Image (cartoon, rainbow, N blue to C red; front, side):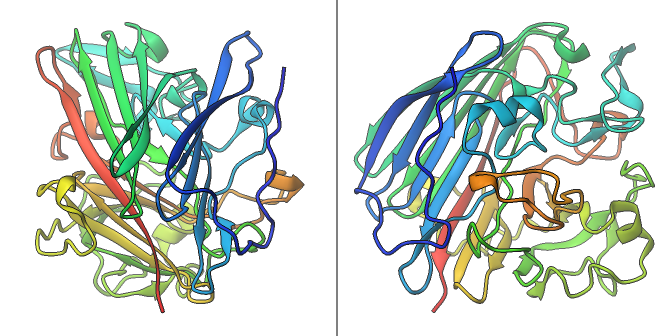
Length: 383
């Protein structure tokens, strides 16, 4: 059974949803017979986030522009079937390992593990059936200043080639301060790599917008990890100064995306990990309950609508992907074709291929330890 929910207005609307609430309805049944639930979170200001238990996917995020017009600012589909049929990770939880592992292999404690090579010669985003393609358990909650959902999943030993049973909990919290908080937790009974992230594609101009090239982006990173032709890091941490990767001050995404640069040619645009500077003094917009260990990672302004997105994280890196592989062949919400660079991703993370790169921050989780990390998105409007 498939259920298609009412579509959001293609060009926005003047009326926000009802104030703070959390609602649960069926969204459909997978091809293997698993029931999928939909959660609609609405905060006191009317911002609405819809997410499903299949992949922990965020279906939509509805926010106002500077004129009070509401629109959906993430890419995706209207029903379950196209997510199962083949999605470029729209809105999903990524794991066990976000990003790439070279050759689909790593050695841990003297043992070599073979993973799926589902991205050319490499392993990407957890393999053939990563966390984006499983049904999670979802439990809604409501408190005085927020609503949210706790997603849980137990990944068995050997799933997609990874060692150990990994018990995962990912909490989405929508606060009345217009923050969407991602809290990631995991424990294991055997040493294993873990690198969880969230893979929403944003277009702050709204559902009817063509591309994201006019968005103005700031990334708080003075270095990035260059990649080879298969998008595996070379192991270097290279300064962004004097390169098209310098977003320390705001630049439009499209300003330098097509310049003659070997790294942009490797990624067909931006598809790179940025090494965050982790300046603890850059904390504007955060409420007290967020935590002192976060640092600002990125800020995005869409100048026409005035919508803004600010990202804070405890992670050391962020992957900026400019939608280079979107080519108009995917029919998204309301049947709209998602063309080249019609969405961007900013995925907080540890660095790609860390299990094979001893100089990178470790992603190995061991028994008795807890994987715990937080990322916060703040939605706003510039005057």
